[in-house]
Image (tube, rainbow, N blue to C red; front, side, top):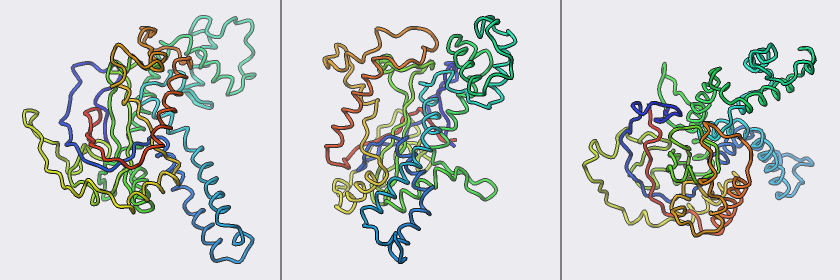
Length: 386
């Protein structure tokens, strides 16, 4: 599985920059990694049911077979949407930890033994005035599990250092690893069996059912962009971001590799063993053309998987050089209001709301463009294969 080269609070001496992969010319569509991942998972989870519905509609004499095709497709689409919604929470939670935009109190859930321990410690007065006036406390058995969670969340929100004093930050590190496990396409053979089956299964579904692949690349946002964005981060190295691109299968696209489908290189080699060497590669002119069949595959995948072109936050970098002329970006700029605390309170600020309005506007602009588009992509050194 891939690993993150830079962790929050990591000593500078531990930082290392592995060799980067070669760039690659691709016909691609930038998409939201969480939307794509949850949609593929939902498609996989409901594939047997939807296939049965289609077969029954086509061959079985029943009320179902008399439904118009459009109604059947709406039913299947609703099944997919419902299943996707049930998958989102875990994906979003892991991704927020990977990005380091999570809040310490985001990691507490009802019926968790850890929450129970924290709650009893606070109830017993381990932290002075943790729950306010002791005279107002009810007996232990009178609190529901959700009330305990709410009390612990409020406690940690008011005293963020509890998060580190009790080693709760390890939960966040675990969720970062979970995220890399979700999107890493490295495969290892252990006892003759291939590991990391879940993401590889999703890759196969995308290739078999839609004739496409996904390129997943990780990056550490530039410090200037990190300071600009009104997002919480307690990482010394700033915000992480995972970019995803729908692309043609390797045999139909460029034969030249980039930093892998998530971080590793397809042939296990870096672009060069020496950073003193230049990069050179001849371009096949046929790569500059794309067939109508390939375009239809992209269109179908985006429609069925509810995955339209998506604006990546890293693309803001080129537009935030001072002085910022864009009025909308000026209203988002948080660099002048950022506090120096190790972790800001996770409150949705006015600037954050304006950021997502701006991103939604950019997504609308992308949706009006013709896709896929020819891109040159290359991996960063943020994540490396084991």
